Image 1 (cartoon, rainbow, N blue to C red):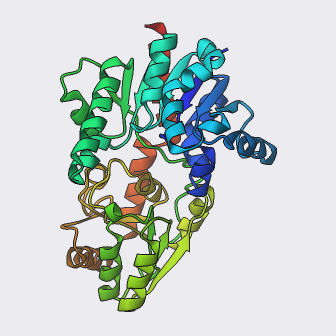
Image 2 (cartoon, rainbow, N blue to C red):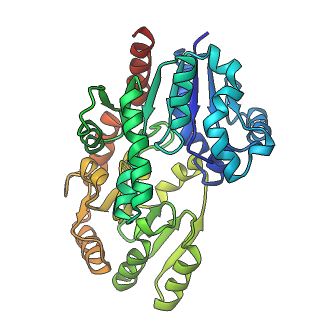
Image 3 (cartoon, rainbow, N blue to C red):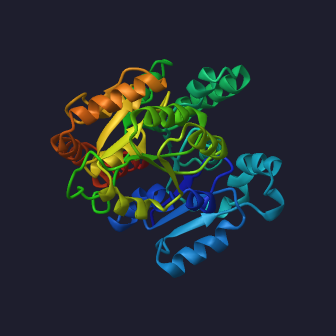
Length: 376
């Protein structure tokens, strides 16, 4: 029997993913690996003792197949200190599973060291799959200690993993610049095209759509101000630490902004048809999944020039780029996109994502890497 352990982010798990509406999205590739016959079992290494109970509910509701299982900490390791201990000794706690598993697969840099410990202790091949580098984030945030620790983890993971999977060419260049001889492969963030179908019609007067965490890096305050200046409605899906502050800003300036809260990713796919333009104005992004999904639905993406958006969007062809990050720049970019509104831009985006960012393609690339790792 071929099996895989997926290491969730540090202090994360199934329940937390579901709270952000991302459970099915995050596990879609691994469920597809099961469906296509690559593996018979996927174990999720998570940090919430209650994930076992929650998974049983998911089985009963048909949300996840019974081939997806979970490895959780004992309840006395549920706190922050306990999570640190579990990330270091969890592979030994679950040694029965680790001894028999075929391959190990991380999800992000955060928490990836548990996978490396599992590889060292049980001599199993490890795919270091990661998103945006934590070290870059901490450096930009001016956190030197966090940066040093994150860089140490990243270097160790790249050095000792059997393979490295990144989500963009920019991240590939970042990780190979350290001089590693490891082969680094771009495994694209994916969209389930069966769920995110091409929207049937376009109307530039529909509200703008934003989906994401309400955090400083997403630059939502400037987006709200820009929409207020432009007089165009905006719908925001998501939650986060800045929600109350942003709601206060909307009231203060009288912008036409509606906070829609968190909806499951599967429901979000159905809501795309109510919009025509998707806006992202982050100050940094790796390869944003919400943008890939928006393009997969044929929405017209308007975005700031972050690394991931620059790889996805060809200005005026598969979307529109914003020159700057402040409210005036965002307003100008949105005004230009509305003035040059063309459904063909959305359709071109849909074709591009269908060719390069489908769930099927990401599954094939991942299965090929894992198969090669087994034979080395």
